[in-house]
Image 1 (cartoon, rainbow, N blue to C red):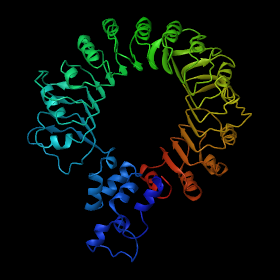
Image 2 (image 1 turned 180 degrees about the horizontal axis):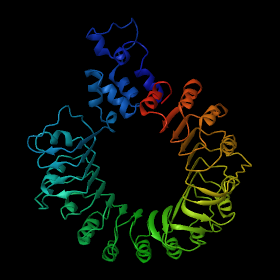
Image 3 (image 1 turned 60 degrees about the horizontal axis):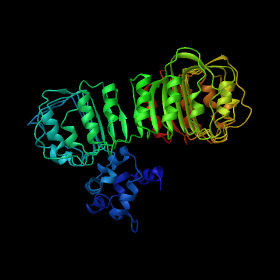
Image 4 (image 1 turned 180 degrees about the vertical axis):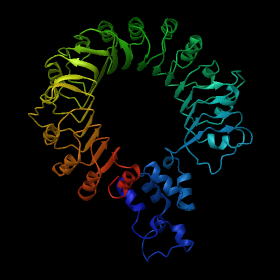
Length: 508
Protein backbone atom coordinates (compact mmCIF):
# COMPACT_ATOMS: atom_id res chain seq x y z
CA UNK A 1 0.00 0.00 0.00
CA UNK A 2 1.27 3.52 -0.78
CA UNK A 3 0.20 7.08 0.03
CA UNK A 4 -2.19 7.20 -2.94
CA UNK A 5 -3.92 3.93 -1.97
CA UNK A 6 -4.28 4.97 1.67
CA UNK A 7 -5.68 8.35 0.63
CA UNK A 8 -8.17 6.62 -1.67
CA UNK A 9 -9.42 4.50 1.21
CA UNK A 10 -9.97 7.61 3.26
CA UNK A 11 -11.71 9.64 0.56
CA UNK A 12 -14.47 7.23 -0.36
CA UNK A 13 -16.85 8.33 -3.06
CA UNK A 14 -19.77 7.40 -0.81
CA UNK A 15 -21.74 10.39 0.46
CA UNK A 16 -20.55 9.86 4.02
CA UNK A 17 -16.86 10.16 3.08
CA UNK A 18 -14.55 9.30 5.94
CA UNK A 19 -17.38 8.52 8.32
CA UNK A 20 -18.48 5.53 6.24
CA UNK A 21 -15.31 3.69 7.20
CA UNK A 22 -15.56 4.34 10.93
CA UNK A 23 -17.11 1.53 13.04
CA UNK A 24 -17.89 3.90 15.93
CA UNK A 25 -20.10 6.01 13.64
CA UNK A 26 -21.96 2.86 12.60
CA UNK A 27 -22.55 1.88 16.22
CA UNK A 28 -23.91 5.33 17.02
CA UNK A 29 -26.44 4.83 14.25
CA UNK A 30 -25.26 7.81 12.29
CA UNK A 31 -24.69 5.58 9.26
CA UNK A 32 -26.21 2.34 8.13
CA UNK A 33 -23.45 0.00 6.93
CA UNK A 34 -24.09 -2.38 4.10
CA UNK A 35 -24.25 -6.04 4.99
CA UNK A 36 -20.86 -7.68 4.86
CA UNK A 37 -19.11 -4.42 4.03
CA UNK A 38 -16.10 -5.32 6.19
CA UNK A 39 -15.75 -1.78 7.51
CA UNK A 40 -15.36 -2.80 11.16
CA UNK A 41 -11.64 -3.30 10.88
CA UNK A 42 -9.49 -4.03 13.93
CA UNK A 43 -7.35 -1.13 15.25
CA UNK A 44 -4.15 -2.92 14.12
CA UNK A 45 -5.26 -2.70 10.49
CA UNK A 46 -6.23 0.97 10.81
CA UNK A 47 -2.76 1.65 12.20
CA UNK A 48 -1.24 -0.04 9.16
CA UNK A 49 -3.39 2.07 6.80
CA UNK A 50 -2.78 5.33 8.68
CA UNK A 51 1.01 4.89 8.65
CA UNK A 52 1.03 5.55 4.91
CA UNK A 53 -0.66 8.96 5.27
CA UNK A 54 1.09 12.30 5.33
CA UNK A 55 0.74 14.63 8.30
CA UNK A 56 -2.16 16.64 6.88
CA UNK A 57 -4.17 13.51 6.11
CA UNK A 58 -3.39 12.14 9.57
CA UNK A 59 -4.84 15.28 11.17
CA UNK A 60 -8.00 14.85 9.09
CA UNK A 61 -8.29 11.27 10.29
CA UNK A 62 -7.82 12.35 13.90
CA UNK A 63 -10.63 14.92 13.66
CA UNK A 64 -13.11 12.49 12.10
CA UNK A 65 -14.32 10.76 15.26
CA UNK A 66 -13.29 9.71 18.75
CA UNK A 67 -12.44 6.17 17.68
CA UNK A 68 -9.83 7.27 15.15
CA UNK A 69 -8.63 10.06 17.42
CA UNK A 70 -7.84 7.47 20.08
CA UNK A 71 -6.03 5.26 17.59
CA UNK A 72 -3.82 8.15 16.45
CA UNK A 73 -3.24 9.59 19.93
CA UNK A 74 -2.30 6.25 21.43
CA UNK A 75 0.28 5.37 18.77
CA UNK A 76 3.37 7.55 18.75
CA UNK A 77 4.39 6.25 15.32
CA UNK A 78 1.28 7.91 13.82
CA UNK A 79 1.90 11.33 15.34
CA UNK A 80 5.69 11.42 15.11
CA UNK A 81 5.49 14.36 12.68
CA UNK A 82 2.83 16.36 14.54
CA UNK A 83 4.04 19.85 15.39
CA UNK A 84 2.50 22.60 17.52
CA UNK A 85 3.46 26.26 17.20
CA UNK A 86 3.03 29.05 19.77
CA UNK A 87 3.54 32.55 18.39
CA UNK A 88 3.29 35.83 20.26
CA UNK A 89 2.04 34.19 23.44
CA UNK A 90 2.47 35.29 27.04
CA UNK A 91 2.93 32.10 29.00
CA UNK A 92 2.41 32.70 32.72
CA UNK A 93 0.66 30.89 35.55
CA UNK A 94 -2.72 31.71 33.94
CA UNK A 95 -1.87 30.42 30.46
CA UNK A 96 -3.75 27.27 29.51
CA UNK A 97 -3.88 26.27 25.80
CA UNK A 98 -7.19 24.77 24.68
CA UNK A 99 -7.54 21.61 22.59
CA UNK A 100 -3.79 21.10 22.68
CA UNK A 101 -2.63 18.52 20.16
CA UNK A 102 -0.35 15.90 21.68
CA UNK A 103 2.60 16.50 19.38
CA UNK A 104 6.21 15.37 19.26
CA UNK A 105 7.50 18.72 18.00
CA UNK A 106 6.93 22.22 19.37
CA UNK A 107 8.06 25.67 18.22
CA UNK A 108 7.78 28.75 20.46
CA UNK A 109 8.21 32.01 18.54
CA UNK A 110 8.23 35.61 19.80
CA UNK A 111 6.70 34.56 23.10
CA UNK A 112 7.29 35.64 26.69
CA UNK A 113 7.56 32.68 29.05
CA UNK A 114 7.47 33.13 32.80
CA UNK A 115 5.75 29.93 33.95
CA UNK A 116 4.58 26.64 32.40
CA UNK A 117 3.68 24.70 35.52
CA UNK A 118 0.07 23.79 34.70
CA UNK A 119 -0.07 22.25 31.21
CA UNK A 120 3.56 21.75 30.27
CA UNK A 121 4.53 18.55 32.16
CA UNK A 122 2.03 16.36 30.30
CA UNK A 123 2.70 18.06 26.95
CA UNK A 124 6.48 18.11 27.35
CA UNK A 125 6.68 14.42 28.22
CA UNK A 126 5.89 13.46 24.60
CA UNK A 127 8.17 16.00 22.88
CA UNK A 128 11.20 14.89 20.90
CA UNK A 129 11.94 18.27 19.27
CA UNK A 130 11.72 21.68 20.96
CA UNK A 131 12.74 24.96 19.38
CA UNK A 132 12.48 28.48 20.82
CA UNK A 133 13.11 31.51 18.63
CA UNK A 134 13.06 35.22 19.53
CA UNK A 135 11.53 34.45 22.93
CA UNK A 136 12.03 36.07 26.32
CA UNK A 137 12.63 33.61 29.15
CA UNK A 138 14.74 33.27 32.28
CA UNK A 139 17.28 30.45 32.33
CA UNK A 140 15.68 28.85 35.43
CA UNK A 141 12.31 28.74 33.61
CA UNK A 142 13.92 27.13 30.57
CA UNK A 143 15.54 24.53 32.81
CA UNK A 144 12.14 23.94 34.45
CA UNK A 145 10.65 23.24 31.01
CA UNK A 146 13.46 20.85 30.10
CA UNK A 147 12.98 18.93 33.33
CA UNK A 148 9.65 17.68 31.91
CA UNK A 149 10.99 16.65 28.47
CA UNK A 150 12.69 13.29 29.11
CA UNK A 151 12.27 12.14 25.49
CA UNK A 152 13.81 15.21 23.88
CA UNK A 153 16.31 14.42 21.09
CA UNK A 154 16.68 17.91 19.56
CA UNK A 155 16.74 21.31 21.30
CA UNK A 156 17.12 24.71 19.68
CA UNK A 157 17.01 27.82 21.88
CA UNK A 158 17.85 30.50 19.31
CA UNK A 159 17.86 34.32 19.51
CA UNK A 160 16.74 34.15 23.13
CA UNK A 161 16.48 37.22 25.35
CA UNK A 162 17.35 35.75 28.75
CA UNK A 163 15.58 37.69 31.50
CA UNK A 164 17.96 36.00 33.93
CA UNK A 165 20.93 33.67 33.51
CA UNK A 166 21.05 32.52 37.11
CA UNK A 167 22.02 28.85 37.18
CA UNK A 168 20.02 26.75 39.64
CA UNK A 169 20.45 23.29 41.09
CA UNK A 170 19.21 20.60 38.75
CA UNK A 171 18.20 17.01 39.45
CA UNK A 172 17.73 15.67 35.92
CA UNK A 173 19.63 14.84 32.74
CA UNK A 174 18.36 14.55 29.18
CA UNK A 175 19.97 11.28 28.27
CA UNK A 176 18.27 11.10 24.86
CA UNK A 177 19.23 14.60 23.68
CA UNK A 178 21.51 14.29 20.64
CA UNK A 179 21.22 17.68 18.90
CA UNK A 180 21.75 21.10 20.48
CA UNK A 181 21.53 24.29 18.42
CA UNK A 182 21.99 27.43 20.52
CA UNK A 183 23.40 30.95 20.66
CA UNK A 184 24.76 30.78 24.20
CA UNK A 185 26.40 27.97 26.12
CA UNK A 186 25.93 27.82 29.89
CA UNK A 187 28.09 25.78 32.24
CA UNK A 188 25.06 23.84 33.42
CA UNK A 189 24.63 22.35 29.93
CA UNK A 190 27.52 19.94 30.45
CA UNK A 191 25.60 18.34 33.32
CA UNK A 192 22.22 18.20 31.55
CA UNK A 193 23.26 17.05 28.07
CA UNK A 194 25.68 14.14 28.57
CA UNK A 195 25.30 12.42 25.19
CA UNK A 196 25.29 15.10 22.49
CA UNK A 197 26.11 13.89 18.99
CA UNK A 198 25.49 17.15 17.15
CA UNK A 199 26.38 20.65 18.42
CA UNK A 200 25.56 23.83 16.47
CA UNK A 201 26.61 27.22 17.82
CA UNK A 202 24.90 29.84 15.70
CA UNK A 203 27.04 32.83 16.62
CA UNK A 204 30.57 33.46 17.80
CA UNK A 205 30.67 32.68 21.49
CA UNK A 206 31.86 35.36 23.90
CA UNK A 207 32.88 32.66 26.36
CA UNK A 208 34.75 29.99 24.41
CA UNK A 209 35.88 28.44 27.72
CA UNK A 210 32.27 27.34 28.36
CA UNK A 211 32.14 25.89 24.86
CA UNK A 212 35.32 23.93 25.48
CA UNK A 213 34.00 22.58 28.78
CA UNK A 214 30.87 21.37 26.98
CA UNK A 215 32.97 19.82 24.20
CA UNK A 216 35.13 18.06 26.76
CA UNK A 217 32.09 16.65 28.56
CA UNK A 218 30.60 15.12 25.37
CA UNK A 219 33.79 14.19 23.53
CA UNK A 220 32.96 10.48 23.61
CA UNK A 221 29.66 10.94 21.73
CA UNK A 222 30.01 14.17 19.69
CA UNK A 223 30.24 13.61 15.93
CA UNK A 224 29.07 16.90 14.34
CA UNK A 225 30.32 20.40 15.16
CA UNK A 226 29.15 23.71 13.64
CA UNK A 227 30.81 26.79 15.12
CA UNK A 228 33.06 29.79 14.61
CA UNK A 229 36.22 28.20 15.86
CA UNK A 230 38.92 30.14 17.74
CA UNK A 231 42.63 29.49 18.34
CA UNK A 232 41.86 28.77 22.00
CA UNK A 233 39.23 26.18 21.04
CA UNK A 234 41.67 24.47 18.67
CA UNK A 235 44.29 24.38 21.41
CA UNK A 236 41.82 22.77 23.83
CA UNK A 237 40.41 20.34 21.26
CA UNK A 238 43.91 19.04 20.59
CA UNK A 239 43.93 17.84 24.22
CA UNK A 240 40.63 15.96 23.92
CA UNK A 241 41.93 12.50 23.08
CA UNK A 242 38.45 10.92 22.96
CA UNK A 243 36.96 13.45 20.53
CA UNK A 244 36.29 11.83 17.15
CA UNK A 245 34.40 14.20 14.87
CA UNK A 246 33.00 12.87 11.61
CA UNK A 247 31.52 16.16 10.36
CA UNK A 248 32.62 19.78 10.86
CA UNK A 249 31.23 23.08 9.57
CA UNK A 250 33.35 26.21 10.07
CA UNK A 251 31.39 29.22 8.74
CA UNK A 252 34.11 31.70 9.75
CA UNK A 253 37.70 30.47 9.98
CA UNK A 254 40.93 31.30 8.22
CA UNK A 255 42.84 28.75 6.18
CA UNK A 256 45.36 27.96 8.90
CA UNK A 257 42.59 27.18 11.42
CA UNK A 258 40.82 24.93 8.92
CA UNK A 259 44.04 23.02 8.25
CA UNK A 260 44.79 22.77 11.98
CA UNK A 261 41.36 21.27 12.71
CA UNK A 262 41.89 18.70 9.95
CA UNK A 263 45.20 17.79 11.57
CA UNK A 264 43.83 17.24 15.08
CA UNK A 265 40.59 15.57 13.90
CA UNK A 266 41.66 13.17 11.13
CA UNK A 267 38.40 11.20 11.53
CA UNK A 268 36.36 13.93 9.76
CA UNK A 269 34.45 12.56 6.75
CA UNK A 270 32.30 15.62 5.92
CA UNK A 271 33.72 19.14 5.89
CA UNK A 272 32.41 22.66 5.14
CA UNK A 273 34.64 25.69 5.27
CA UNK A 274 36.26 28.59 3.40
CA UNK A 275 39.74 27.76 2.16
CA UNK A 276 42.30 28.23 -0.59
CA UNK A 277 43.43 25.55 -3.03
CA UNK A 278 46.72 25.29 -1.12
CA UNK A 279 44.90 24.72 2.19
CA UNK A 280 42.62 22.15 0.59
CA UNK A 281 45.62 20.15 -0.62
CA UNK A 282 46.86 20.00 2.99
CA UNK A 283 43.40 19.04 4.21
CA UNK A 284 43.32 16.22 1.66
CA UNK A 285 46.52 14.78 3.12
CA UNK A 286 45.19 15.06 6.70
CA UNK A 287 41.67 13.72 6.09
CA UNK A 288 42.22 10.44 4.35
CA UNK A 289 38.62 9.33 5.04
CA UNK A 290 37.04 12.51 3.65
CA UNK A 291 33.88 11.69 1.69
CA UNK A 292 32.07 15.04 1.34
CA UNK A 293 33.42 18.58 1.14
CA UNK A 294 31.68 21.93 0.60
CA UNK A 295 34.07 24.83 0.12
CA UNK A 296 34.00 28.54 -0.57
CA UNK A 297 37.22 29.16 -2.49
CA UNK A 298 39.21 32.13 -1.20
CA UNK A 299 40.93 32.90 -4.50
CA UNK A 300 39.83 35.99 -6.40
CA UNK A 301 41.83 35.23 -9.55
CA UNK A 302 41.56 32.66 -12.31
CA UNK A 303 42.17 29.25 -10.82
CA UNK A 304 43.13 25.72 -11.77
CA UNK A 305 42.36 23.79 -8.56
CA UNK A 306 44.56 20.76 -7.95
CA UNK A 307 43.06 19.52 -4.68
CA UNK A 308 40.42 17.23 -6.34
CA UNK A 309 43.24 15.03 -7.65
CA UNK A 310 44.24 14.38 -4.02
CA UNK A 311 40.69 13.47 -2.96
CA UNK A 312 39.76 10.53 -5.21
CA UNK A 313 37.52 9.05 -2.51
CA UNK A 314 35.07 12.02 -2.54
CA UNK A 315 31.39 11.26 -3.10
CA UNK A 316 30.19 14.89 -2.77
CA UNK A 317 31.93 18.08 -3.92
CA UNK A 318 30.35 21.55 -3.65
CA UNK A 319 32.40 24.56 -4.73
CA UNK A 320 31.43 28.22 -4.41
CA UNK A 321 33.33 31.37 -5.37
CA UNK A 322 33.51 34.64 -3.47
CA UNK A 323 32.99 36.30 -6.84
CA UNK A 324 32.87 34.98 -10.38
CA UNK A 325 36.31 33.76 -11.40
CA UNK A 326 37.48 31.59 -14.27
CA UNK A 327 37.80 27.94 -13.25
CA UNK A 328 39.77 25.28 -15.10
CA UNK A 329 38.53 21.80 -14.15
CA UNK A 330 41.26 19.67 -15.76
CA UNK A 331 42.15 18.01 -12.41
CA UNK A 332 38.55 17.05 -11.57
CA UNK A 333 38.05 13.32 -11.96
CA UNK A 334 37.08 10.28 -9.91
CA UNK A 335 34.97 7.15 -9.98
CA UNK A 336 33.37 7.72 -6.55
CA UNK A 337 31.83 11.18 -6.96
CA UNK A 338 28.02 11.13 -7.17
CA UNK A 339 27.07 14.72 -6.19
CA UNK A 340 28.64 17.82 -7.78
CA UNK A 341 27.72 21.50 -7.38
CA UNK A 342 29.32 24.72 -8.70
CA UNK A 343 28.21 28.23 -7.76
CA UNK A 344 29.54 31.56 -9.05
CA UNK A 345 32.13 30.41 -11.59
CA UNK A 346 33.04 30.93 -15.22
CA UNK A 347 34.43 27.78 -16.79
CA UNK A 348 37.33 27.68 -19.22
CA UNK A 349 36.62 26.27 -22.67
CA UNK A 350 35.62 22.59 -22.69
CA UNK A 351 36.73 22.06 -19.06
CA UNK A 352 33.21 21.54 -17.69
CA UNK A 353 32.40 19.02 -20.42
CA UNK A 354 35.62 17.12 -19.69
CA UNK A 355 35.02 17.27 -15.94
CA UNK A 356 31.51 15.81 -16.22
CA UNK A 357 32.73 13.02 -18.44
CA UNK A 358 35.50 12.27 -15.91
CA UNK A 359 32.88 11.58 -13.24
CA UNK A 360 31.23 8.49 -14.77
CA UNK A 361 29.02 7.69 -11.75
CA UNK A 362 27.64 11.20 -11.18
CA UNK A 363 24.02 11.14 -9.93
CA UNK A 364 23.34 14.80 -9.05
CA UNK A 365 24.59 17.99 -10.71
CA UNK A 366 23.78 21.59 -9.79
CA UNK A 367 25.06 24.80 -11.38
CA UNK A 368 24.10 28.22 -9.99
CA UNK A 369 25.16 31.74 -11.03
CA UNK A 370 27.63 30.25 -13.50
CA UNK A 371 28.71 31.25 -17.03
CA UNK A 372 29.20 28.76 -19.87
CA UNK A 373 30.26 28.99 -23.49
CA UNK A 374 27.01 27.21 -24.49
CA UNK A 375 24.51 24.68 -23.17
CA UNK A 376 26.51 22.04 -25.04
CA UNK A 377 29.19 22.34 -22.34
CA UNK A 378 26.80 20.32 -20.19
CA UNK A 379 24.86 18.14 -22.58
CA UNK A 380 27.68 16.98 -24.85
CA UNK A 381 29.27 15.31 -21.82
CA UNK A 382 28.52 11.69 -21.08
CA UNK A 383 25.86 11.85 -18.38
CA UNK A 384 24.79 8.22 -18.46
CA UNK A 385 24.20 7.88 -14.72
CA UNK A 386 22.84 11.38 -13.93
CA UNK A 387 19.48 11.33 -12.10
CA UNK A 388 19.00 14.93 -10.95
CA UNK A 389 20.01 18.14 -12.74
CA UNK A 390 19.44 21.66 -11.40
CA UNK A 391 20.42 24.84 -13.27
CA UNK A 392 19.64 28.29 -11.87
CA UNK A 393 20.70 31.65 -13.27
CA UNK A 394 23.14 30.02 -15.67
CA UNK A 395 24.27 32.28 -18.53
CA UNK A 396 25.73 31.26 -21.89
CA UNK A 397 27.81 33.21 -24.41
CA UNK A 398 26.18 31.28 -27.29
CA UNK A 399 22.58 30.20 -26.80
CA UNK A 400 22.90 26.86 -28.56
CA UNK A 401 22.43 23.31 -27.34
CA UNK A 402 23.55 20.00 -28.76
CA UNK A 403 22.32 16.82 -27.05
CA UNK A 404 24.03 14.04 -29.02
CA UNK A 405 22.98 11.16 -26.75
CA UNK A 406 20.25 10.20 -24.29
CA UNK A 407 20.33 10.96 -20.59
CA UNK A 408 18.98 7.49 -19.80
CA UNK A 409 18.70 7.83 -16.01
CA UNK A 410 17.64 11.48 -15.60
CA UNK A 411 14.60 11.49 -13.32
CA UNK A 412 14.39 15.12 -12.18
CA UNK A 413 15.14 18.40 -13.99
CA UNK A 414 14.94 21.87 -12.41
CA UNK A 415 15.50 25.04 -14.44
CA UNK A 416 15.35 28.56 -13.05
CA UNK A 417 16.22 31.88 -14.71
CA UNK A 418 17.79 30.11 -17.69
CA UNK A 419 17.36 31.45 -21.22
CA UNK A 420 16.70 28.14 -22.95
CA UNK A 421 14.38 28.31 -25.95
CA UNK A 422 11.31 26.08 -26.07
CA UNK A 423 12.70 24.19 -29.08
CA UNK A 424 15.96 23.42 -27.28
CA UNK A 425 14.06 22.37 -24.20
CA UNK A 426 11.88 19.97 -26.17
CA UNK A 427 15.01 18.50 -27.79
CA UNK A 428 16.47 17.95 -24.32
CA UNK A 429 13.34 16.41 -22.83
CA UNK A 430 13.01 13.98 -25.72
CA UNK A 431 16.45 12.71 -24.73
CA UNK A 432 15.27 11.92 -21.18
CA UNK A 433 13.12 8.76 -21.39
CA UNK A 434 12.84 8.36 -17.59
CA UNK A 435 12.15 11.97 -16.65
CA UNK A 436 9.35 12.08 -14.05
CA UNK A 437 9.82 15.40 -12.24
CA UNK A 438 10.05 18.68 -14.14
CA UNK A 439 10.28 22.13 -12.54
CA UNK A 440 10.54 25.64 -14.03
CA UNK A 441 10.97 28.92 -12.20
CA UNK A 442 10.90 32.39 -13.87
CA UNK A 443 11.29 31.04 -17.42
CA UNK A 444 9.72 33.20 -20.13
CA UNK A 445 9.97 30.37 -22.65
CA UNK A 446 7.58 28.25 -20.60
CA UNK A 447 4.23 29.39 -22.01
CA UNK A 448 0.87 28.00 -23.05
CA UNK A 449 2.34 26.51 -26.22
CA UNK A 450 4.91 24.55 -24.23
CA UNK A 451 2.19 23.18 -21.94
CA UNK A 452 0.20 22.18 -25.04
CA UNK A 453 3.06 19.89 -26.04
CA UNK A 454 3.41 18.04 -22.73
CA UNK A 455 1.74 15.02 -24.28
CA UNK A 456 5.08 14.19 -25.91
CA UNK A 457 6.41 13.28 -22.46
CA UNK A 458 4.00 10.63 -21.11
CA UNK A 459 6.49 9.51 -18.46
CA UNK A 460 6.08 12.79 -16.51
CA UNK A 461 4.49 12.46 -13.07
CA UNK A 462 5.18 15.82 -11.42
CA UNK A 463 5.15 19.31 -12.94
CA UNK A 464 6.11 22.56 -11.19
CA UNK A 465 5.76 25.93 -12.95
CA UNK A 466 6.48 29.06 -10.91
CA UNK A 467 6.14 32.57 -12.35
CA UNK A 468 6.52 31.67 -16.01
CA UNK A 469 4.54 32.98 -19.01
CA UNK A 470 1.47 30.75 -18.66
CA UNK A 471 -2.16 31.91 -18.42
CA UNK A 472 -5.61 30.39 -17.83
CA UNK A 473 -5.27 28.53 -21.13
CA UNK A 474 -2.41 26.46 -19.71
CA UNK A 475 -4.54 25.51 -16.71
CA UNK A 476 -7.33 24.32 -18.98
CA UNK A 477 -4.85 22.22 -20.98
CA UNK A 478 -3.51 20.62 -17.80
CA UNK A 479 -6.99 19.86 -16.44
CA UNK A 480 -8.21 18.41 -19.74
CA UNK A 481 -5.14 16.44 -20.78
CA UNK A 482 -2.79 15.98 -17.82
CA UNK A 483 -4.93 15.44 -14.73
CA UNK A 484 -2.69 12.48 -13.82
CA UNK A 485 0.14 14.89 -12.95
CA UNK A 486 1.02 16.21 -9.50
CA UNK A 487 0.97 19.92 -10.29
CA UNK A 488 2.32 22.97 -8.46
CA UNK A 489 1.69 26.26 -10.27
CA UNK A 490 2.25 29.83 -9.17
CA UNK A 491 1.66 32.74 -11.49
CA UNK A 492 1.24 36.49 -11.34
CA UNK A 493 -1.34 36.16 -14.12
CA UNK A 494 -3.62 33.69 -12.31
CA UNK A 495 -5.25 34.30 -8.89
CA UNK A 496 -4.18 32.01 -6.05
CA UNK A 497 -7.81 31.04 -5.44
CA UNK A 498 -7.99 29.63 -8.95
CA UNK A 499 -4.70 27.80 -8.58
CA UNK A 500 -5.83 26.27 -5.29
CA UNK A 501 -8.67 24.52 -7.15
CA UNK A 502 -6.16 22.52 -9.19
CA UNK A 503 -5.76 19.98 -6.39
CA UNK A 504 -9.36 18.93 -6.88
CA UNK A 505 -8.93 18.07 -10.57
CA UNK A 506 -5.36 16.76 -10.64
CA UNK A 507 -3.38 14.33 -8.48
CA UNK A 508 -2.12 17.33 -6.46
